[in-house]
Amino acid sequence: MGHDKLRKFAENETFSCLLQPSAQEVLARGYFNLQDHAIKGHWNERMFARPAPIVLELGCGKGEYTLDLARRHPERNYIGVDIKGARLWRGAKTATEEGLPNVAFLRTRIEFITAYFAPGEIDEIWLTFSDPQLGSENLRLTSPLFLNRYRSFMRPGGIVHLKTDSRFLHEYTRAVVEANGLVMPACTADLYGDGGISREERPELFEVQTFYEKMFLAQGYKITYLSFCIDHEGDFVYPTDFDAAYWRSVEGPRKFVQVP
Ligand SMILES: C[S@@+](CC[C@H](N)C(=O)[O-])C[C@H]1O[C@@H](n2cnc3c(N)ncnc32)[C@H](O)[C@@H]1O
Image 1 (cartoon, helix red, strand yellow):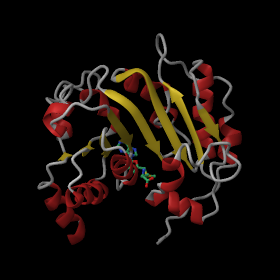
Image 2 (cartoon, helix red, strand yellow):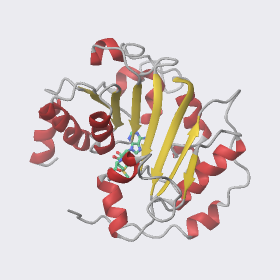
Image 3 (tube, rainbow, N blue to C red):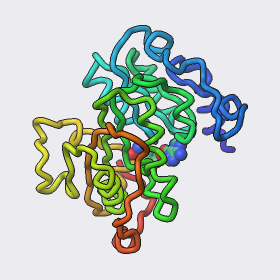
């Protein structure tokens, strides 16, 4: 491991806004019987020391959305979740330097998310430029498997936002939403084109651009957005009419490029 990563990992230990439980703790009773973490159901009093609605960003990377939304909405608490410690370092460092009282980060695999949040504890979820997982449906963060997990801790009426460059993931998610009859307040395949979403009403959608969003915009990809309400009776079902082969074929290659 490089010196820079080691330095960041060491500094991560000093951030009070960053929780980094070991996977062994959660997996003590096995993958299908996760051990609840002590903070489950207690984020507001133990992490934020005040009651407020909590918003999650899953796969937050460097935490741009978490930080920006937290600055815009000081009346809410925000938690960015990712497995990569060097990326979380950036978010936790900024939150610490700015003294943002309503920001926290959690280092975990999202597969273990139910070990950290209690029923009704979460108000809203943001999925920002999630990996589309072209070949593995159950790894997609909007698959029925993940929606069942999220629903276990979302308040009734809670909204999930998906902002992505991946037309494949956008269309897949739309198919999941439709197969389950979920309410979808907004959906556009071209946010910055004639997406029909007002910049004045939803400035955070247009004004916050993450590390990956900038990279994909620089390569000419359109940015898509949709939101849906997670309320649903019974298990979520898998879509049967999603044409994975077609949407995979239009996906296009991504490069990892440096952007300012
Ligand atoms: C393409 S990046 C997007 C990062 C950030 N949202 C952005 O827009 O710049 C996807 C992020 O999701 C994280 N991720 C993917 N699958 C994950 C999982 N199962 N559990 C935790 N983090 C995951 C990766 O570590 C990575 O930081």
